[in-house]
Amino acid sequence: DIQMAQSPSSLSASVGDTVTITCRSSQAISTYLNWYQQKPGKAPNLLIYAASILQIGVPSRFSGSGSGTDFTLTISGLQPEDFATYHCQQNYNTPRTFGQGTKVEVK
Amino acid sequence: QVTLRESGPALVKSTQTLTVTCTFSGFSLSTSGMRVSWIRQPPGKALEWLAHIDGDDNKFYTTSLKTRLTVSKDTSKDQVVLTMTNMEPADTGTYYCARATVGAPITGWFFDFWGQGTLVTVSS
Image (cartoon, rainbow over all chains, first blue to last red; front, top):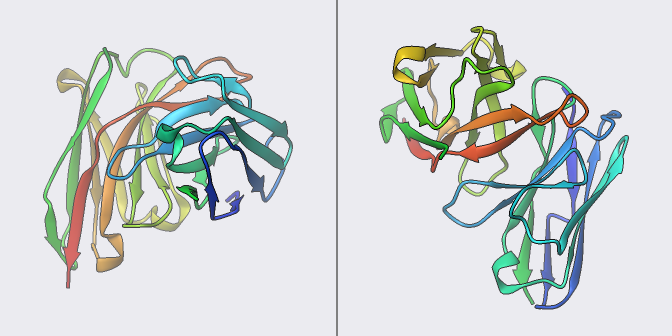
């Protein structure tokens, strides 16, 4: 199974900051990498698929990059509604696997 | 409008079998490029993909739970059912069903619609 490791596990930031979250896979997965946002008590919400394609309706302050084993999610100009937990997920093969999540908290 | 909704018991006892049902609308599992997946999340922990099924009845399971999981579909009811045998307290968590779709071969699969989840507590 492919292991996904996110860093950091949590971070503190202020509104307006630029935030970067990293996801690393245990083997090369090309660009078969998705990002989700999850707020407390809610289901995850798809932000980015194929490493860098923004899902319809997702604000352009979210961006993704990377290929192979190293990926990043960047939030440029953090907004109050962006404080949440972010998860990466590989769809290179089955079983699908997720990272452990990164919680973005208010500084 | 795509929707998914999980239903099942809130509480099960150790060694019992869990059955959760996903009722969906707004899409057909028979359509090429559609799957329904089950994903769970223990309280305060990471998401864990469990299984998926497609319209051709192809099924895949996560490696560590393969012997305990069964996924099935009822096309006439637009439902997908997950059963997990021999439940234990470590299986406590929120169980989600999600639609998986593939934008194009180069994009791979992603979970674009999720149910609200159903919390299952396993008592010892």
